[in-house]
Amino acid sequence: MVSAMPLVARSTFRPLLGLGNAHLQTLLPAIARRLPPLLWSRERLELDDGDFLDLDWLNPGQRRLLIVSHGLEGHSRRPYVAGLARAASRRGWSVLAWNFRGCSGALNRLPRFYHSGASEDLAAVVEHAVQTHRFKSIAVAGFSLGGNLTLKYLGEHHPSSAAIAAGVALSTPCDLAASSAAMEATHVRPYMARFQRDILRKWALKRTLFPGLIPEIDPRRQRTFRQIDNTFTAPMHGFADAEEYWRRCSANAFLPFIQVPTLILNAADDPFLAPNCFPREFAAQSHRIHLEVPDHGGHVGFMDRWGSEADLWSEVRTLDFLEPFCGC
Image (tube, rainbow, N blue to C red; front, side):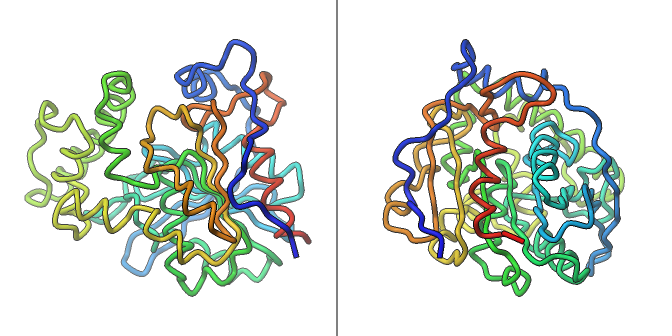
């Protein structure tokens, strides 16, 4: 039995000297961190609905597996995914970093896309890993949108989730409505502009493939997640509107049903998150949901050191949390 403190009273994270600012923490690991190339091996997983997911494997042959889900408009080769994958492989894990539909460099086949609640795709990935019969234990970790998706998956009790020993969600918008509102603030508009550009570019490609299903795009009217989710995400994935999508897919609603030890790691200064994304009261009473809220760290940042060979604090913390439950 592993003892636990569900609400971590004091985080050990300390930002690199001079990098305490939330925006520096958010930007520098994404644009300035240089990691040596990893020896990924790609596999295409065909789905029952006729679509596919591209999976990237690292360090195959180990007895424990870490399945990693990236964030909005990310992919498996982003520095935050590659950094965790490298740290895990160094410590004797196999890693499966999967790409959401349309995020691997190849547009997916169906009109639908990925979204914050598409946990059926993570379930398909986990089931595929289970069916290889290669792993004694499996853990899951997700960043940002992938963190929300990971928590939702764990709380839904898919048949495949019985194989999961533990999970970690990093920089996670546990309340999608509140986080979407936070992204309308002036100081995060540059981030929102980048998401808008990338999302609308993909939807424009979709429109050429499926004429009549995708509405005309006026970028001036698609500047917030509320607008984007009302126009595209909700109707294309069976939700009445953005509000229903957010309500049905927000991780907070699934936390009471998670049955495995799970760490939520959200920085207090994360510019993408709102107060409701920090489920302090729930974690304080939970035996399974661990919440750690460092004062600093930004969004998917947690940069406490520099250098291509260094593992970041969040990578070490993630593995330190998972390994007691996934020993081999």
